[in-house]
Image (tube, rainbow, N blue to C red; front, side):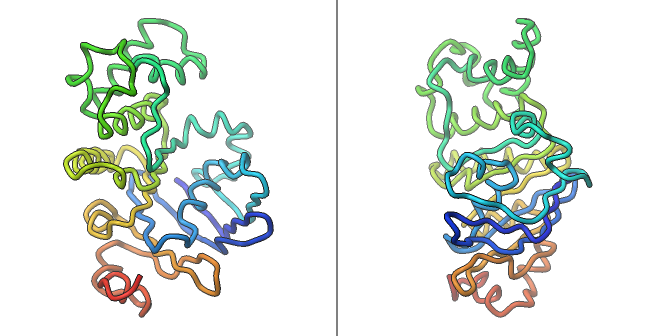
Length: 252
């Protein structure tokens, strides 16, 4: 569903990620792991074209969506982000009601019918397990929700647009353990429905959730992918000594 070939990202002439080649198949969960500063977040930003709004950022290489060049499929970044959603480390609900958080992006993409807006919003909230918690206070500010609820609302906001791909940048790292568990269960339930690329520093989480794993590392000051493959194969028998040390906790 999403594939990159020799993807490199630079900021003001300094390369932070070089020659990243990855393929994420339809419906699978791909975990991106590795120490901080080795290009994982920049990799996601390049796929979702967030690099376009960062002064001095440049991207080289190829990105394909369902076998076609990403820019050919989605000439507009707005259209791209309808099909390739992004969830960030810190929950980022809009400073408006819970209902409007869900309806605003739908309206931006041309859905105006009030009945359809309500139906899609309820369906998205049910998908993330929030409906029973917020159905009686949809007009309240989303900022009044707990951190875990805010993150699930942000995921619901992305799912309301019916994306094929979800990019997640450490979606559980700012949450308490119980909230993180709820979000992790939600991600696990997406298997087979969405292609999910998730950056995580939690190796146990990566092993629990993912079908495939890609290990990023810094070599000569530049982030690279040093190993990738089926999750259990990489964790049980890594071929790269650096990866073996990292996954066993001896390095990184």
